[in-house]
Every structure is written in structure tokens, then in C-alpha cells.
Length: 426
Image (cartoon, rainbow, N blue to C red):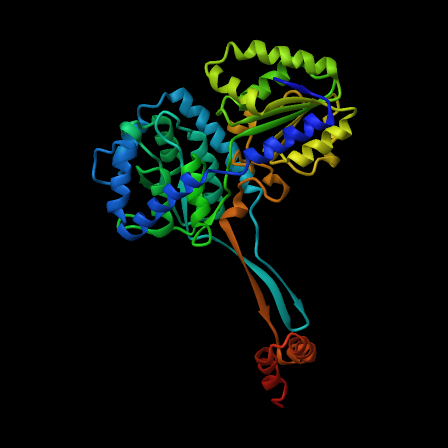
């Protein structure tokens, strides 16, 4: 893991991170467009064809029955299921705090306000097979349930008929009844367009590979999406008080995700930088996913040494990481200056994996610098808002001339006429 100090080196590394976040290739998009088009026009036939091709699907039915879900869920180790139950409890409690209410107020006899309602139907994508994540079921389904979404359709691929008992246990635990054994771009297409087996949804959420992310990007507008998630990333700000073993372990906790993951340490201490560099090298050798993590830290990892911690915060805000850890004696001192981060982990006993599994806040976070303008997945993502307006005749007359004036300067005579016909009615 390289140590960077020179402004030119740091600038080049930041450019590399921006390039990394730019998304898939033209070839990926071309492939995805073809899949989307076929599913749109051929429905179940296309979904089955692609699922047989990519996942070796044996059955001819896309939807899983409650009995099938339970059959596989029953294979889950009860101790692990208890851990999932604790995680679900904490995630639900946190997201209950995000609920929004409708509101309104009166100006004399004029009513203005906002009506908040849940989305009616949501599609959730969950990775499946060997790379299965029951935590993704919890993090994507629970906020929708807390919001009051009536219908949740969940898609999980089962490549080679590989079905995770823990994903199924999480699905059963949350009471999700509409589950489909499909993945990839074809699953996104089925949710967006609808097929004979599946009605279209209003919004698609959940993580996936580059084909899933590209498909979500291309159907956005027809349906809403949560975000276009890129490779995972962590940025650690640390001072000389930080434990180098902690810092290295936290960097590698994200580097093991995939070779495009990014792990960055920013510190004002060269001594700490060198110790963390040695710790990364040592801990790498003991990881099961050593090859992946090593490629990640070699390509997109760095230790940046700055003259002070405020410069470190400035760089962190520029990178706008998915996960930001502050390993300092007084981490809250920096909090007012941190503006761009998906999730902020304060202090040495708050490692990022706590947030991935059981802390409570959502682990679906903005990546690739999008924390500059977007937020973690939450209950608010499953709500929509309608403005409320109700004017009496007197309230209308108070504002009529102002509307006439503004519509005239914008050249919208029909707008003005809708006001004038009422204003002139005595």
C-alpha cells in the first residue's frame, strides 16, 4: 500500500478514484440494453431464457413458493438466525425514527401542506448463490416495511440451484411472500416492465454486479431506483493516537469485497502511516480473500500524509467516501467539518463492519463520490410527497393580480386566463 505526500501524487490518485467511479463499459451497456429490450417485448420467455443461460435454471417457474422458502430456511443454523433476528430488530428500531408525517397549516382560510404516502409496490434485488448476503435482505426490506409499502417483490438469483438458507431465513423472518428466483439485468427488466409472472414495480432497490447496476441506470425514469452503487470504499482519518492494527484491519475489511474496492488512510503522522503500511502487509497474508484484497489495495488503496488533520478532512470531503472512519482521541472534534460521507464511524470502537450488520443504520450507501449529493437508503426512499393547496375565493383574490403579472412576463397567456376568468367573476 503506497504512501503519498507530494501534491502531484495525491492529485493523480484522486483522479484515479474519479475514473474508477465512472461506471461500466460500452460493451456492458450494449449487452444490458439487449436484455432489457427482449424482456420488455417477450416477458417471461426472455427472463427464463436468460436465467437458464446464466444461472442454469432447471425449473420453468420463476416464483418461489412459501414451502420452498421454508424448506431452505429450515437448513439455517439457529445461532446464525438469532444473529439475524438481533440485527433485524436494531435495523427496524433505527428506521422507525425516520418516519415522516403529513403536515399542513392555515393562512386564514387558505390551506397549504404536504401529504406523505408510501410507495405502493417496490422491487428488491438481493445477490444470491455463493455470494449471498442475508444482511442485504434486512437492509432493503425493513425500511420499505417501516414506510408502509403494501407490496414487496424480491428477486434473488439461484445459480446452479445454489440457494442460501440464510437469505431464505431472512426472507421468511420478514414475511416477504413474493420471491422470484431470477437475477442479473433480466431481473431488473422484469421488475421495471412487468411480465406475465410479475407486475411492474414503482421502485427498484438493492445491490448487484455491473450488469445489475447498468440495468437500473437504464430503466430509471420508467421506475425509480435507490442509487447506482459502485464498488465499496472506506476512508480512514487517523491521528498519531490511532492503533495501526485497527486502521489496517478496517481498511482491509472493505478491500476484501472486490478488486475495485478502495481503501484510503489519511493521517498527519508519517510514523503512523509506516506502521499501518506494515500492518496491512502482515494482515493481508492471513486473509481468506487475500488475492482480492491485495489487488484492491494495490490498485485503489493509498496512505496519504497531510500536514494537519483539517487538510485531511478537506481531502475526505473531496473524495466523499461511502464509509468514513475517524480514528482519533477526540473524533467528535472533526465532525462539524465533515460534509460528504455516506456513513461516519467515530472512534476506535466503531469499525465499519458494525454498520454493515447490526448497528442499525442502513448499509446501502452512496459510492463513487455521490455522497456529495445523496444519502443512505432509508424510509424516506419508500415515501412520496404530494403538495396540498386549498384557497377560498378571498384567498384567491389576494394573490390573483400577482399571478397575472408573473404569467404575463413569462408569456403564458393561458395561465393568466385561468386566473382572469375567476378574477372577473363578481
